[in-house]
Image 1 (cartoon, rainbow, N blue to C red):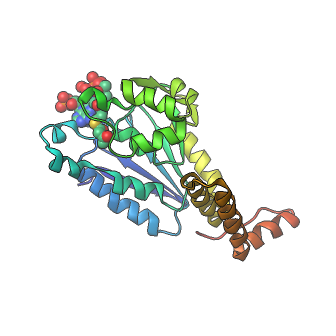
Image 2: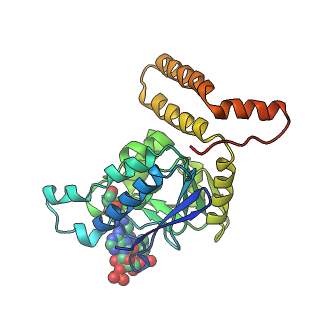
Image 3: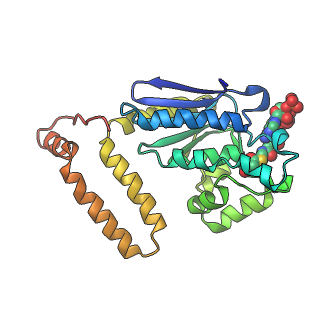
Length: 255
Ligand code: CAA
């Protein structure tokens, strides 16, 4: 226990892996611990943004030592998706701030974020095929959604570890920070997002997801219109528009 840390600064929570001796490789126990803290974030109405960030290395993947002797049944214990899905489904923006290595299950954790920022010297990839397996925590689903199929296949089939610059070129990360600045940049972005209407942000996040899952784009547009109109039932909409008309900054409620 104690290998996951949740710190809170005002409305921003930062979730970190603290297992430096193994480059923050993710064990089953560690992900169970993460699950409990993600639940805490979900239930805390004061938290408006979550940053995933670990010192020196984001995470070098699932723990290979623990998995090496698994058979099919035992391997199922290393499926981290229930926890990763919970992160993706949080009703607040999630930012991954990537330092050092983000590989395999580590990069799959970063893929649960809405926005990824990597420092210049970060290294990312899905080396699973070099171990005789494939991504198993959402990589084959989330990466093509973000980069398109061809870039995702190249990344996953080669197992290549790529630079932040290459990752940005294929859309795997939104932007690049100077080395040592990525957490600061993520905090700045989080502060900006915390000033936006939290109910509107949650609705936008939900609607973007629904649109991606909806094969009929006209139905997608309809879902958007319904969710948009519902926001007119909120105090935040009244406050946001009133503040604009009164030429002042809005004060939105907690989510
Ligand atoms: N699991 C367990 N231990 C790991 C680890 C991992 N994923 N990654 C690194 N470590 C450990 C190393 O075993 C080493 O421990 P010891 O000192 O006890 O030997 C320590 O961390 C430092 O690592 P290295 O000495 O290897 O450091 P390096 O700088 O030479 O290399 C690296 C860094 C290129 C990231 C290399 O450690 C590496 O290739 N790691 C494995 C990356 C990987 O394949 N990840 C995918 C895992 S599978 C997965 O995630 C499945 C899934 O989809 C859920």
